[in-house]
Image (tube, rainbow over all chains, first blue to last red; front, side, top):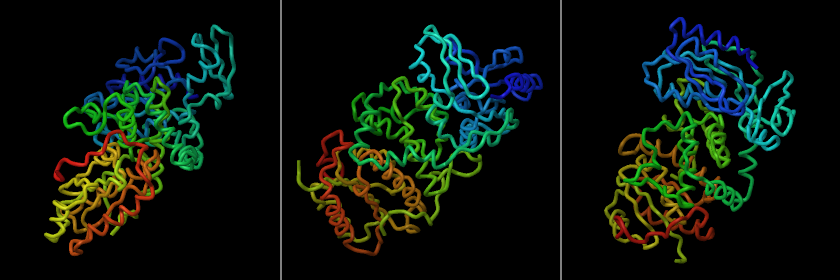
Length: 317
Length: 146
């Protein structure tokens, strides 16, 4: 865990010195399980800053909601930093108007896994040194291993460290294992076609179309989404099985070469629908074909925004 | 349901050099093939492919100009990256990879489109009808083919 006092001190410093006009971070939410994104405009407000493993939003999603001229400070973990890089490449905010306070990430806890065991009425969640999570709820007190509670995207994270932060607070973490990150999608691809399709349909058709995944994703910033477009209607978009499938197919495909595998879409989903088996497949494709990983820097163009004559492909000549 | 596979053909309007080929594509396409003429393969949004797939197509063929012979210089190269990734992605969730075929036509090669369509039909015939992602009935008439 990074030193919360050091985080606050840095946030206060940049606000006081006028480096930024606003710092995006987290504050305590209604329950201990849900810290909320917060926007601090003065040094006094920063006292409310919290940072713990339950901070599950990808803060980069808020970057595109402010004018490009506004100087923004932001708490970034590994995935958020890469999302910021990708957004900077896409011209959504100039890097000069950003001040990134980097935090090497130890992974985000899936609050659902806590609630499964302790019931909804959680009073406090405390992380102890050594990786134990102490949860106090009305049903009693519980101790969990942190590794057992980690969100799936976080347990297979490759780059937990911020790559281009202006200042890093906390000790750097070891890089993750790419083979582990690949495992989910490789296992899924090894299933027979019918099983894959059945799984996809089952997941997609549970969707209630609240678009929480779209709101949570830093890369989904279009003014008008293809799915909201009525005329011309780009694809099946009604509240039918085909519409649900279409939405899931295209939402993920629009992240090709831009997704940083933060898993914010899955964490935001109220129906607990799995989505990363789609985006991870596309990420894996980009890794294999173009050796590209999204957001590793802010200058390399993603595969779909550049072209070359020497791609290996299955186009027939 | 017909026995022959239903195919959607996305055809670049610049690469059918001979008038005979053009005429065949415009007027004599078999009924199981739905023609969508596009100004360049680079104009094909992957959503068009998805629409065809959800519309009940058993196969999708995209045919455009050779690399470096694109009427708009690089449209087909840009299309290649997107469409290929999209086809692999569809394979991931249940639409066989063999059902999507990309073709680069040589401007000089006459009659090639008929041969390629026949070969494609033979390729997808053993796979049977595509049911996994289909949502609508296949439209046999409409658009330029009507």
